[in-house]
Length: 231
Image 1: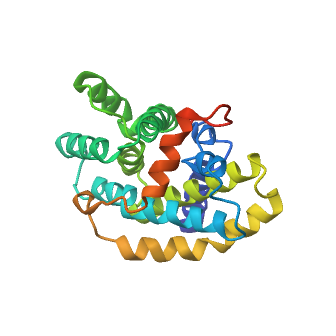
Image 2: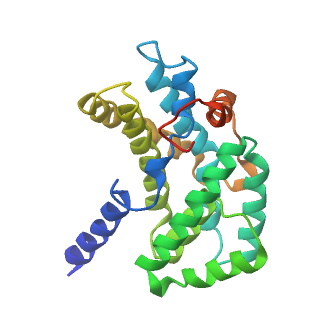
């Protein structure tokens, strides 16, 4: 019976990690398209360095918000409100702020449909009534906690989704091919694990964004003549 329960839970995680999940993340490049048009990805190692910077930035900012979502024994709306406003202040690039809010709304709606027993609809009503921003990283942690996933699972899933979407964006932009993207993605799993070890136990008040080139690439996106992605 224990093996059956574990297998079922693994299916749930694989479902949430599936690129076909209609969470809307495929519509965002997280600054990769802007960096490509700036000419920052022409060197042989540039793409991997850019993706590593994106992963490290997420680990030292977004993952700390996920950590804090697991800090209280129950859904703490006061804490969530403080985290959402803190994240909003950190999102200096308009495209980044817009993308985060849009992804957060999509994720909230999706998780509410998938896990109706988790009380996520109550969270949606509170967000609507309070007028709080809907930043993805905060709502990602809050909804996965409400749905019964462990903190370690939520952290791994977050970085996996970011890495998966960056490699997918690189393929659609024609920077690399699908086979090479798969190889590079696999090669970065160990890097993700090391990043998560470094930020384990840190809360959102320690969050930092230390890769300004990512914000610059995000900011450029609104000014591109033509684009494949929203940000």
